[in-house]
Length: 309
Image (cartoon, rainbow, N blue to C red; front, side, top):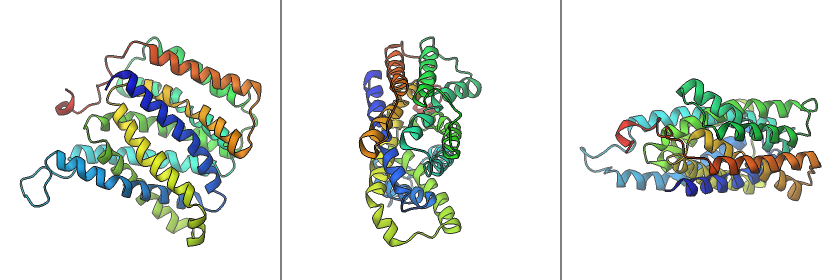
């Protein structure tokens, strides 16, 4: 896959995620956050299972043969467990925050992980950001600040929780780059959501008491977020990260805040100020800057050695 096609996949993923903020917000009218996270993760896991099985068959897995390849390589399993744990923590803070934060605020505050990702990549991987990435990250930061109205004083407790989740989304992007190197995107994504489903189900049983009526009322939200915003897009993310760097991907995906703002305005009646629209424009510019930049030569550093070619 070319770098351009990988980045287009990331942009499509951002659009799906941006609209998902609306469904995540409306689901809180009838469901608790733990129940919603568990429901979306269970649905995502079941959706991905046949695709993960197909990948395993292509890799040599045969249930009737003792010397066949394993259903899931140990390295891939470990990578999925770590990435799933990071996803669970990020999703939990985000969903708890959306109980009081608007879908629009949720979008631009989540985009703060654009700033965190290259910093983590520099500290964790000793990966120096490219020259074009630095101004792109700066533009994204200014854009998210402007989308918030140019002030942090009005942030609610929910806004702060969503801002805090940026750290875990940044960790997830970097861990997903490692998982992408195995060439088994459906399996890697399925493992992640199995982890999320397990942890969120425990939270649901301990802290909430969902009813069948409430689950039916939120069926559309669960279906959209579980199938499109979870199973499909995170698989696409894993595929795209084989051909572009985690820091670059983070900037492109940050356009989800712009899509969230548009969806919030059209579907929930949320309105943006001229300053906020200016911020949205800066994020688009940042995406163009990083897409037109020379391709980093170190983006394969996280691939397993046997899959690096």
